[in-house]
Length: 176
Image (cartoon, rainbow, N blue to C red; front, top):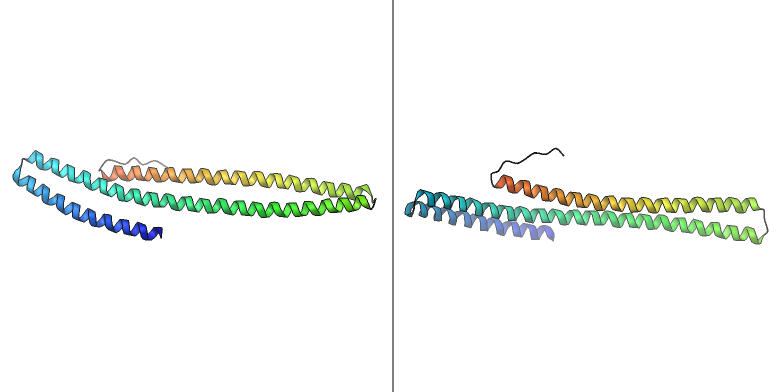
């Protein structure tokens, strides 16, 4: 659906650019005939500026589309991380419940303390695992959020670079 919208906007803007460019060209030709060379040069500068603005608007739409795609991508990653964490947490809770039941049965049967200590030790390991998995999940979610921010900023950098190049200014090349 978004691709269709982007394609339609692109076609409309392309048509507008073609008509606008042809109109501007005839206007500047008329200025050249009727006015001074300075007026003609100003008309050409205005025409280039108008064309640059139109191209930049098209590129902005493309950048916005890319931003939406990146947001969707990282939202999927975050949801997947949450789902995996919930599954792992559920598994740990089930194991913990089984250990608690084992401890209760052992106490009711007045069995040896070694068995209870073993189950309690296993319970401690499970809780430690649960804590570490939670911390891992939270850190990964932060990574996804920061990477998404970074990619959105990089798209803004690309837009600025495009604007420089479309206006005919030298583009600085930074190492990435």
